[in-house]
Length: 433
Image 1: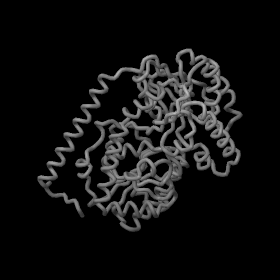
Image 2: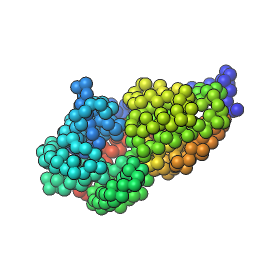
Image 3: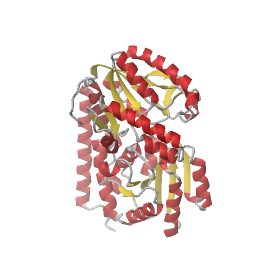
Image 4: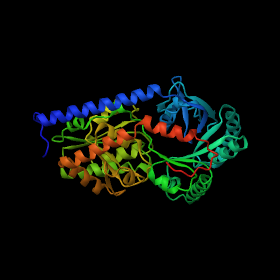
């Protein structure tokens, strides 16, 4: 073992002081930049996202944390209007949005897997979107989605500038979420093809490098990293090194328990770990979704109920930060991803990451993540066991992750996005960012 728990040497103490001073100076510089920053003049932007919103406790909530990233544009635009369907059931309210976010509610309709039942709500949405355009002069439309395609036409008819946005590979998502549904697979490919065609005309924002390749023909293209992490939340390498790996080890999973996230693999990984070191490993799962019950059943079937804790939804904030810092590894088991926000959260907490080799992780952060084949619990368990005993490799991953988190804070990514969307979107500029 390269690291011991005894007193630090003088050199180590000097190194830690230097890290702390550098982090303090970096944070100070960003703070001063924020103080002198101004809103982008004349930019009045509407953002359409294809997931539901809810009202609960007098506040607007979104089902997905991506909306929190969108909300960061509020102080960077003259006006920001979020457009989305409002679900009257507050049960799925997850992420409260800041009070200053303006919201235009579209009629709620069932999932697109029931298209006939969704037609009325979507038809009414066209009229409301037409009216909402009175408030703005440009739109950012997330998709692929039938309404996004229609909204492009409406926005251009009203002379508004258009930019597209893509968060995930829709055909891959549908294939994993609805296996065996050929009709849905065909519909997803048609939507994807339509969106890629439009992306040859309009500037496009994508999440992660994998989607950047798919939409590379856009006249202007920006690949963002969805980050909610700020400088003050990022640990130093010295702080991360204080985490001990000598005793019990906690593996953390954070995210929705949906089919594309492959959460049942978590149980199989834990079983493989317990076969090797019976009483050392524990699994904590923060997230909710339709596969929470099956995951619990799988854990009980493998007699792992006492070694796992399903905490359900844990909101972004201090409780989730504390959970990261109490954990020794973050494990991602997804079949498909863009670039997951939870990766940034783990990097900021100095937690080593083991993840399936999907989406843009290899291209974007291979030096900071231990990658394993998708659907291979034995490989994931081997990586966790190896990292638990390899101080040097853990330190390498953690330090690379901390550097990555510093480069991709929420403020930095929101600034990049705001500046990209502020450019005249009708201009045939060929430069890519």
